[in-house]
Image 1 (tube, helix red, strand yellow):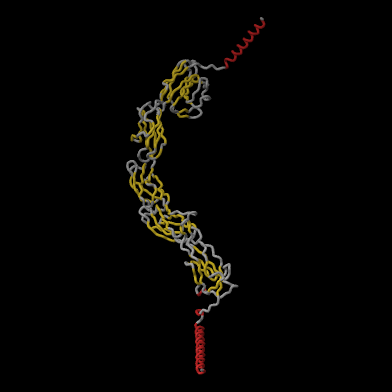
Image 2: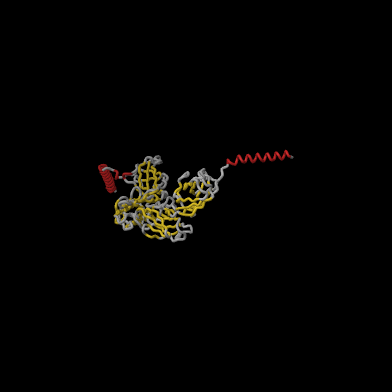
Length: 547
């Protein structure tokens, strides 16, 4: 038992000895407290720190930081951004230090501006181990605006902090009191606010925005930029438009240009504003820059000239028009009271009219004879040319029915051809493209490669060959072939009729005889008649003697 007791005492002694060796290795933290007074303030305010409970003779370092840390943490490791505000060498157990609230933290890893918010005062030993901590609230009286540049009437947001709580807010732009359009009209319990105002009429350049709350005020800068407004911002040549400008120089001459050409000008008023009328010059349809400019400022806006043309009724591939239809061509945006040319199709048919005083027009035309398909209708004055599309119908007329000469019949050399009339196609009760004309061909072969007659544009359903077209006599072994087709005013052609055949027999035609031959035949005929008469006379006389 004595041995066990001895071993227990020995073990305890060894452990205590080891603890005695280890204790000097652990640094002892100096006891201490700090109290910051006042507990809040503005940048550059004079602040007092009361210190107590520290070990006399130690060096104490004081820091100001936005980062929160605890006793035992290290400056530079647990606190990165800070400002060293004081050092107390060989301090007493109780003492005081003073410092001015800095506007920037510059001794840490990176620089940091001091703003409204919570900050911390640290007391640390020479190894930067934090011994004591107290907090401090920074109050920064200031305002910020967004945006900080723009034109007259721009809405600006004003944010403020650090002011007296629950107080009225007054805003001045330059020397002019302005209304708060929306947002806070009083500061909050923390002295902050967010309010909005619209930039009043003022000359170009920088203007001071002053916010006043109680006895405190703060300022910001806003830059006024020039701007113009056009009313209306679209129209036609010679239209009278109002150009209004703001944010230009004080009582200074300015000019107005339209697409680079000067069209007007005047002088700004005491607020850098103006209103002036100008006329739209003669330019084609499109968008143009209208610019106002004084010696140092300029602003521009866009004016649109929209020239339009329409056709009524409208047509399409599936709903085409016809030759002879009445079309109403209407337009806007042309030169007022000016001559207009309306051109139909690529093989142009030209119509003329005059625009109204507002640049509009309406003209009714009858669709001329033209081929099936798309046709362009263009309205033009001296500066603008606008087109629309007209679709011509493409339905072919019926195939004619042949009447004369009969199939394999006999005809004169000046043959007469006849067929039934063809009317224009009828589509949903709408008459097709009139008039109908015919094409007649006569050939010596069924393929119509050897054409003797090729007549187009025949306006009636019959035709008689002229003497220049007279056909020679032929027989059934070598007949003539003929066919016809109908063509409407839109050049839509029917199918050819089947090839009909006929022959031409011998027919004596005095008109084909030359002058001398005709006279010889007349003489011979007279002699024959004389001898017949003489013979008949003798015979009659003999009979009488006979009886």
